[in-house]
Each structure stands twice: as C-alpha cells, then as structure tokens.
Length: 205
Length: 168
Image (tube, rainbow over all chains, first blue to last red; front, side):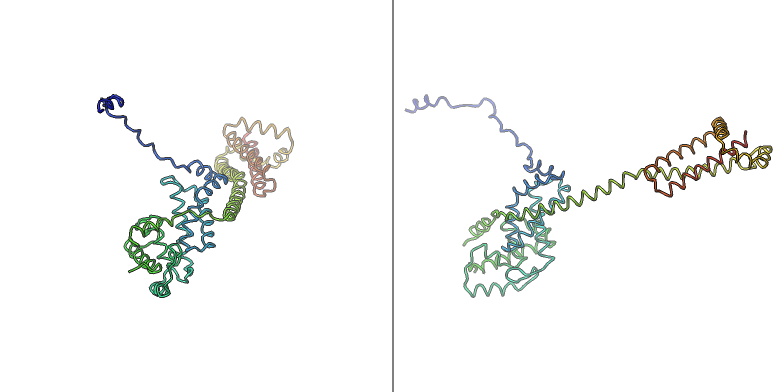
C-alpha cells in the first residue's frame, strides 16, 4: 500500500539547489501618479479622476469628524479638494497621494473646528469641558444609541481624537502634531473620549 | 463588550461615504474660476514682458548719450583744440551752421566725420543709439521721453558735425 502510493506520487522531490527565490518586491508606484502629474499641469479631467477615486474616503472621514453634520462635511470636502488642486505643485510624492490628500482633508476639518469654535450637534464647542454632564444626561435617560450616532454625539475635540485614533488608525504622535498638542494630552483625551462613548452606549463600568 | 470587540466595531465605522454630485460641480466651478484668474493674470504679465526689453535699451541709450556728451565736452574743449581751429570756429561758426542745412555740405561733413580718427567712433555710437531709439519709438510712438531722447541724440550728432567742421 505504502509502496504503491509512493509509486503513484513519484519519489519525493529533493532540491539539489536552493528553491527558486520569489522576485524581490518592486518599488511601490503610486497608482495616482499619472493623474497627479497631469492635474499639476492644469488638466481638470485628471483631477476629476482623482476626485472620483478618493472622494468617498475623504468625505467619509470628514463626515465622522463633523459628527454627521452633512452640510459641514460637504463644505469641508469641497474645501479640501480645492486646496488639493491649488497645492498639487507642492506634492513631491514622498508619500502616496491618497495619504497626502487624507492629511490635507483632516487638516481642513481641524482648522475649521478650531477657528470657528462653533458648537457641534450637541451644542458643545471645541474647548468645552462640560462633557461629564452630557454623559450623565444620556446615561440617566438610559438611551442606547448605535456606535456611529454615539461618536457623533461626542464633544468636538474628543470626537476628533477618537475618530483619528480608533477609526482612522492614526498614532498619538501624528494626532498631537496635527492638533498642536502633546502626545500625552492626546492619550488623555482619547481615554476620556472612550469613557464618554461607553457612557453614551451604556456599556461603561 | 470586551476591548477587542469594541476596537473592531470602531474600525468598522471606517467606511466610504460618497458625497452628493453637487460637491464636484462646486469644486469644478471654483477651480475654473481660479484658473481663469490665473490666465488673465499671466496674460497681463506677458504683455508687460513684451516691452520689458525697451527699458534696459533706453537706459543704455540714455547712458551713452550722456557719456558721449561728457566725453565730447572734455575731448573737444577749446583748450584741447588747436589754436587756429578755435579761432576759425569763432569766425566761421554762423556760416557753417547755415551750410549745415544744405544737403551736399552735410554729406561732405558726414564723410569727413567717418574718416576722422577721433570722432568716427563717437559718431558710430551715436548713430547706433539713434537707431535703437527709432526702433523703440516705432513700438511706442506716443512716448514723449523717447522723442526727447531722440532729438537730444540728433542734436549731439549735429554738434559732432560742427566739431568735424572745425577740424577740417
């Protein structure tokens, strides 16, 4: 039996030389490079192609940062892409275009949030510290909101840090650099934001 | 909800949201507006640049006129002229000015000027300046400063012809 099986399968293959080595990974090419170059030369169609490719992702993060304020997210999306068009000549290709665009869009949102300092959906401004009261109100009412709605209810700064860290995957150092705060402050704010979120969802301790 | 489940659910919020169509329309119109502004700005810059070369040319011409005038004043001052020529100039200046208007006399003086080892180079430079100014005037016929400089250059050439007459 064993011998028959061995005959059917043939002798075990022995490599006299080292097995073929997989070709080394080719240097990464930015898939947007051609359109970026064309758009930098003033071709609006190429820029439209970039918009069509990235608008969903950019608008998504801006909607989350805006706390589902649709009008504000649309305004930021527009602003971000116009700014990207104006600054295309400064894009050196050191990072992927998608990364560059994402950063630029987030920066537009954060600048707007900090400069206008207008209240969010819950009427809480960027620098508002009265977050514990908001949590208490929601907890007392015993409301159970879904996660996206709960994130949208967070105070502006807490929401920005939670979205960038826990949803978008940014590091504290990156968030701190973008917001002009210390990395430790970003960690503390995230801890607080998570606590608030748990409170909103009624899953906290 | 444990920590792992919590993180996973937050990550799942990271979905794309397509903006409404009017967002691109607004972006395109803003881009178009800024593009047309840039074009009109670069057009006006280009038209300014078209005449930019006249400035250094005019500056050079003006410098040459002044330099030649000063050089002529020093080189052909009465002290540097032969005594008999100066005396002759005093006597015959009026007649020679009158003769300068007649064409054969003018041609003769210009021919003499071209042969003069001292004045020929100066005359050539003045002639070149005059030609440059005439070219510039063709582009900007209403320019008073160009006309002033051209008449000044012409008068310098006339003075040169007078000096040539004194030499001959």
